[in-house]
Length: 605
Image (cartoon, rainbow, N blue to C red; front, top):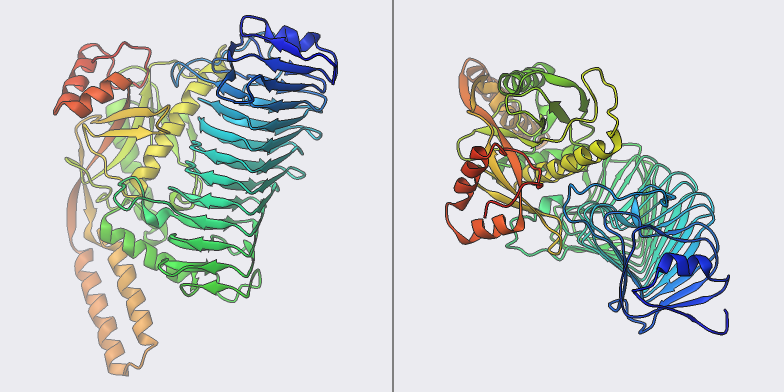
C-alpha cells in the first residue's frame, strides 16, 4: 500500500478518486453518504475502508442501479455499506454510458475481478445484493450482512465463485445464496441464513453449493431446494424454523429442510428441528447421501423417498419420525390439505377431461370479462407445493384498458377451493396501465427491457400471493396483503374483478379426493387380516357411493380477485379505519385508476 492514505469526503467525486488512485493505494472514506450518478468501477488492487471502521458511517449508494463493479485486481473493502434503493417498485432502472454491466446486483464482480468484503453491508431494493459472473470472478464475504433485497442475497454463475464466512444473510425476497452453471461454486461457512422468500440454499443447473457450520432458518419455505443437477453438500449445520405459532403467514406444511428434484444432496453431521419434513426426494432421479443426521420428533415425516431406491443412502442417522414412501406421503399430505380447506390439490386425482374442462371454463370466463387472451403466456411448470413455476396468462384488450396478468392453476377442477367471501373458488390477477412489451404481432417495443422489467415485477408479486393462497392464507375482497420485509414492504388490497360465474360440475369431481382416500383406505385394510366377505363388502360399498355421486351435479361460483398496489399512507389508513378499503377502491374507480398497480398515482389518503 502507498504510504499516505487517500482521504475522500462525500463532497468529492468518489469514482474519480478511485480511478486516479495508484495500484495498492489505501482509500479512506470520511463518514457520510456517497451518492453516485454512475457506478464505482474498480479495476485494480486497492484497499478501501471507512474512516471509523463502522459500516453505519460510510454508505455508498446509487438509486436503483449497480453501485460497485469490480472488473480486475484484488481489491478489499472494509466497514462500508453498499445500497441500491429505489423510490418505488416500478421505478425505472437508472443506467447511463458509464454502466459496464447490466444491473443485476448492488455489487458485481465481473471479468477478472476478485473482491473481498470485510464487515460490509449490502442491500438492493429490486435486485440482489452481490453477484459474481465470469470464469475468474470471485467474491469473498467475511463478517458481512446482507438484507432487504428485492431478489437474492448472493448469486454466482458463469464458472465464477464465492466464499461466505461469519456472515448474516436475511430478509431476501428470493434465496439467500444461489449458484448455477457447471464450474460455479459457493462455499458458506459459520454463517446464518434467515427469512428468505424462497429456498435459503439454491444450487441448480450443475452449480455446487458447500455449506459448513451454518444455521439455516427455513422461515416460510424450504431450507434448500436442489434442482436441475444442482449439487448440495452440507456439514455440521442446523436446519430449523423459528416460526411464530400464531403467525397466519406461516404454514408448517411448507417447511421442508431439504427438497431435492433432479439433483444431488449430501448431508453430514447435521441437525433438523421444528420442521414439517426433513428431506423430501421429489423425483426418482434425485440422489441423497445422509450420514449421522439427527432429526427431532414432531415432524410429519423425516425422509420422503421412493422405497428401496438405490440412489438414497442413509447411515448412522437418528430419525425422529419414520421414513415414508413418497406415494403414501402425497396421499397423507393431500388429505391433510383437504381437511383445512387449502387451495392445494393433486392433479393426479382428476382425469384429463376434468382438468381440461376446468381450464377451458376459466378461459371462457376471462374472455367474457377481459376480451381475448394474448398469445404470449408463462406456462406452469411443476407443482406449486414443490416450488414449481406459476403459470400466468396475459389479457391486453379489456374494457378497463391496460394489461392483466391472471393465474389458472389455483382453483381446483371442481371449483370448490380456494374459498372466499362471495366465491366458492377464485383465481388471482394483477394489472398495469404500462404498455405491454410486445405489440400485436409479437414484436418487441423500443423500450422492451424497461417494460419487461415492470411485468417481471408484477409476475413476482402475483407469484408470492399465489403461494400464500396455495398454502392456506385466506384472502377476500377488501383484504390487504403485505409482501417483502419490514423496511421496504409492498402493500396490496384485493377486490373482485367482476361478478362471479356460476359453474355446474359433477359431484364426482368434487369428491375426487374423498374417493381417492377411500380407495387408499380400502387398499390398506385389505392388507390387514380381513376375510374375503369383509373385503368384498368394502369394495361394494365404495362402488355404490361413487355410482350415486356420478349421477349428481352441483353448482359453484367462480371469480377473480385482483390485487392492487397501495401507498404506505393508504395501508396505514386502512388499518386504522374500519371500512376504509372499500372507500379507497371506490375513489380509485372514480379516478379511473382501478384496478391497476401503478404507484405513479398520488395517494388517496
